[in-house]
Image (cartoon, rainbow, N blue to C red):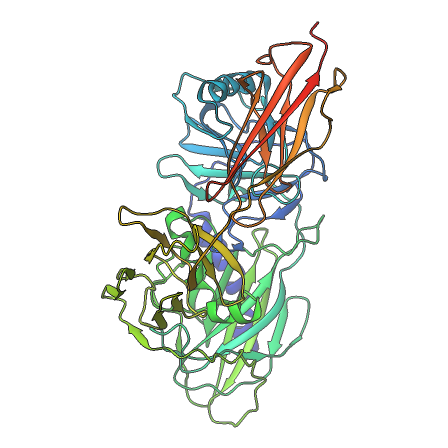
Length: 565
């Protein structure tokens, strides 16, 4: 009888999320895939990224750029955005059924769109554009070629980022739910399993996780070593999924937990709002991530976790029952390939556990921050303002305002709202810098307020101090020489670089006329493809102006010759 109940439970665990999901209506045959080649993913929907969830599918393009991108359904182009970072070149298409598709990291658009947006770029004299269009400006048909794949923006390899959103609130939804098919017959895999004993949900760092060893029972069931837990306890996992044609470690779709055969909670990656994406740092064990570079999903909620991913409103903790009990974790991908982790718990038996030791934190914390209050720390012209709800719970900080630096330190906590920092301009430098717990230095601001003090809002913690950057950017031609005939070349390419504070802006002119140089910041290159806006002359004067973040300017001048007919 006990065996029969166990079999029925496993059947229920494997099918329950799909019953819930079937109640949601998604048009299955409305959207076609956006690219001709078989869909192979380098990233899937909802997987964990730095400070955000991934909002779409990253579709591999066979390490090539220039593959045709097709519009998934009839509609109109509602937005065209071109940026140095982020999505790079991106198209947004609104459809009559209330959804929006997004195509990002593009190399270029089709000729009609390219000509349209280039006119605006030349009119505004800006490569970066964020343009919202009306319904009748650009209507397009299903399967029409709208662009070509690329590697623009914050993309570190050729691919297409593809999204389906709800148009009314731009909420990203899982494209696989709409019938966008990716071959996947592989089960999720386990990297690690952790237990958390006597959890305080109002304290991120209340307890360090206990790492559990596990063994494989069969293809779908794993079992950990028996563990002794008492009081309110929880668990965490690091799991991933691989599709059939790639070995990328992508995210899973559903994680459901059960205690003594009763559902505790379920996480489903169906969709999320962009404004809640930063709350990923309440989902993962942030302290463990900072110290071990491993993202462990906590299967219980701590203070501030208001993510909409959960099926139930409880906090996911269990009150350990006397003697023997079992906790089960069911993990599945969106194709219903699944595994179960069984965790036997014995609250009476003394069990030696394999405890993962966190790095020792030697920071002396001198300020207790109540999450419900705002704080101002002042030392002369130095000021720190911490608004309420900055950390979503009470925390300890090390705060020190001295002549040469300003410290706001606790490397183990995430920041959810901006902290205002004001630092007096001592004329010893021209920008404010930050040093984090890993000794990594970053530029913060060169902006001065009316009182001649550096002022910024930031989510960075660490040590703030003044630095000086007096070295202008460097500019170097890559595919031509001064005085050279380049009639056989279709474009100009130059390297621009600033080693300290980075590039703020650049400008290129030919014979005094602004021309469209595209900036590939990952390589530090700008390039201009000769277009209809170039006025043909045998002798041409090229001028490139580059400014860094503190106002240092470099000007590069060169002559090139090109046939005018």
